[in-house]
Image (cartoon, rainbow, N blue to C red; front, side, top):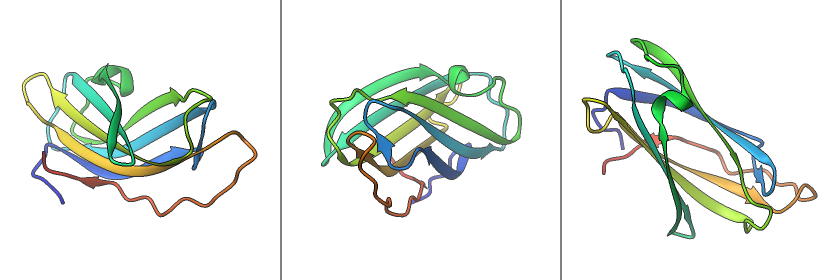
Length: 133
């Protein structure tokens, strides 16, 4: 579902895909905005089999260059998952808020984690979608 957000998400790229536990992963989000954004927060929540297992908050300007000007921009988040992270299907939810705007956008997407480098699988098709909160 698409909300009427200041930031519109165009796509999500995960590298590597699927994510490998114990190895670095990069989540790159292509987006656009109709108004300049000077700062804010990115709240990342992770769910495993529907259970909330992790949450972290980052300064928006650590995830992308600020100020964000009108037009297209890229938000990139790097993460090293612990080697003991169980393999399986996960859901990531990211909410962006601005200094003066309570909610810039909210996106949710599924991703897979494989255990170690020996496993190989093709991930389900990824689709980023904006959701209402």
